[in-house]
Image 1 (tube, each protein chain N blue to C red):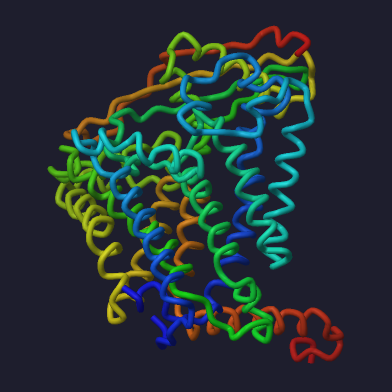
Image 2 (image 1 turned 180 degrees about the vertical axis):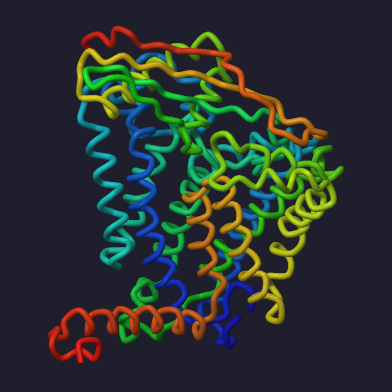
Length: 309
Length: 164
């Protein structure tokens, strides 16, 4: 237990995770602006008295609870959330921005009733965990990506564990509920999902529905991945990379099939928590080298390039 | 995942953090489990923490029972530029339309009116533009070989947007 929570791990993956999380939040806020405005902006649903029961009771809260129609609260909260996301990506004032992001995003997400998506659950959860991690951990690790001299370049493992265990719970319980459903048990669930060709599907895979055996294989494959493969095999060094690659393929498949870009995006960002320092360095160096190469190509005089010769 | 290097913090601090983490994970586990007589009894003790911190989650039931309806929604805008049609494709937008009647079916028209008012502003600069939302449906059958024809089943119209 002591090792699981307190061994010192390199903070490089955490630095990359913080950067990507900030970038993702900017994307998420821009993508969700219309639905947040629909509820809490001017003439929003919450001012019309149409909020479903329970959105502001039993402990749920939002800064908009006492806002009145036409007040500038929405613009202020939305703007603060966006700024905190940018600051998070840049690694500026991470402790302060993590608190601002949690307060503002929780306020924007809580009122969403219709139009609420699984990604909102994850964002709400992650902003809180990010705040706990940045307040409870050492501030230096958040800058480790570029400034290792700010600390010893390590962070306690529990910071990683809160994110990792949460993602395992998401997969495991998603699989557990599927097991209780007859269409997942009898292997026909994917027949219906692949049949949604009219609106949510990006590519028409309905041809597969004509092959029940393939449908059953896909259905049980998804269930197996969610229930066993990810939540359990991710913890073993020998299988971890394979699970991450499989997960990446799984979410890319869902993205192609169902246009769940935001959901797939947040889960893939989440995967960074499972990377090692070496893997993170490989990714960062790979991206930096490409950027450097592009910059050199862009700035090189046209007459001196090999192509022109 | 990395080389182990022990934390030099005091044992008392480590015990406290371990206890809090286990409590947190325990609450998440109970919250996500299918409800039982025991978990319902425990709800009152921890739900305030999970709801107040934005951690509330009830089982991740996405696609627990995939719908057998292959619906689509179409927006029609009529303004000075003529008539244009758009198919609603974003998952969140579809989610809003489909679930707008979930809590209280009587509110569905009002919620969709607010949605249409915003869509009209986004899709047309003409203040007198008319916007219409149509729902087409067809059922997915297990034995089907050819996709079934879609049928128009519902229409919401916003003819007079008013001042708003």
